[in-house]
Image (tube, rainbow, N blue to C red; front, side, top):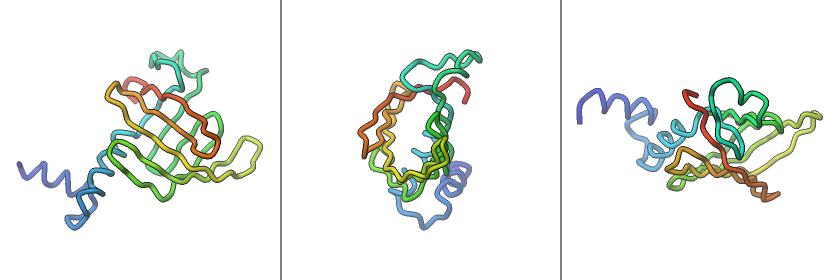
Length: 127
């Protein structure tokens, strides 16, 4: 392993003392970040703007429902589970449990656990 790879891994993990499971979670989260469309292929040519866009950052998920602040993120393999405090368009706050499972075909299975709402998120090219 080259020193540059060690440095990058250390930066991603936050410190050399972070357990291997946390390191794999950080790498998974980095892969999860981006812009997606729900249940339809994202073209990435500007025509997707009217569709259900979902933007996943390290601290929140923003979708047609509203922004959800993420907490208590836990990784198991390719699946991240997190609690979300979501603000609906009406202004009310709803606490939810979210699950994101990364797939090999560049999609993410999404589940809101209490309502059993499911969708497939398709990554937008270059985002």
